[in-house]
Image 1 (cartoon, one colour):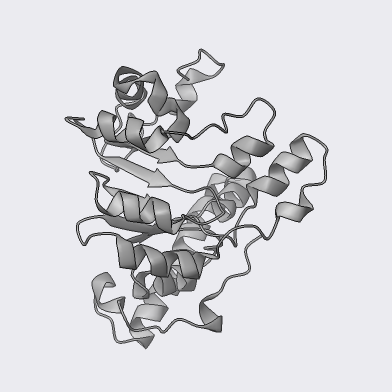
Image 2 (cartoon, rainbow, N blue to C red):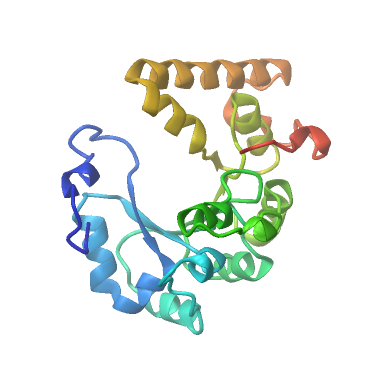
Length: 242
């Protein structure tokens, strides 16, 4: 939208959903363009904050990608000083590293989406786009469970931990919350439902809520926060995202 590309109105969703949390989305490399650029991304869509995606491997595989991350965290640290909106970080399916999580844990970051290995694989996607075989990169990264566990170690209690990377069902959401996530995120199910119809989206959301309710009932959890610690890590917590 900021680069003058087509269909800018597709980003203006606030008028349709005035009360939901809404964040802008840019790559971490855009921080080098300065805080005014980041502010414009937020305010142009009336967002509540911004989530910066950290995707060095994807950038490396992209034609014309911005793979030079040298000094980028220092630039982000400078931007955070006095920045008026919450800033979150997210990986894109390879799992947030210990280094990134440790850095976030001692800086003014509102939260991290761990985006572990197990969901949509952007190395594979870039291979399809460029008609190259990127299958060698498909297993490169850290699985969602291991990344989530690392996040609980490094992030503060006042920071959001968002679990994503193969989250497909309400039970997956319950597992993530039980293992320390504040929120869970998914993309592929919504893409499939949205490509079908609005009715499919509504039905899918209803199914997720029902599956989460069952998990809460089964674990004796009267509220979402009560799920924490009710499900142990292990093979059943792994997902088989596509």
